[in-house]
Length: 113
Image (cartoon, rainbow, N blue to C red; front, top):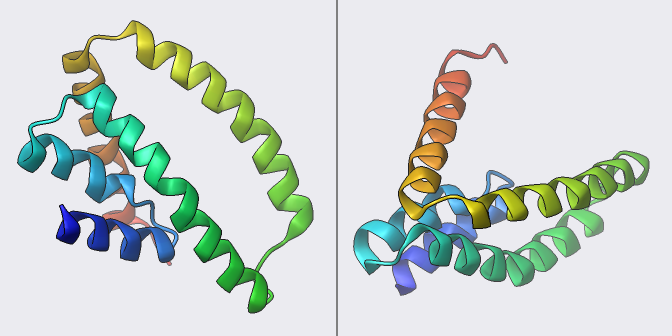
């Protein structure tokens, strides 16, 4: 679990999203169901985000007007997404998450920088 947390923290600090590592690792290696893995991910996200924000703030990388609007809409999205996730079976949630990761992986692979 230490290695999973360490890798998740590194990915989170890079701004990629530690859940891409943490959620599948908890399910595969920890035997934890999808809903619990996502809850652990969200809980672990808080302190890692605080550290990453402090470093990015120190380096002047935060655009506050953009961050405020994304935060407001993100809160609304989190409420909707949490409500939806509670209504889904663990299997359906896991498949949906896998499809999302696959689509994002394909996008990242083919996008032009």
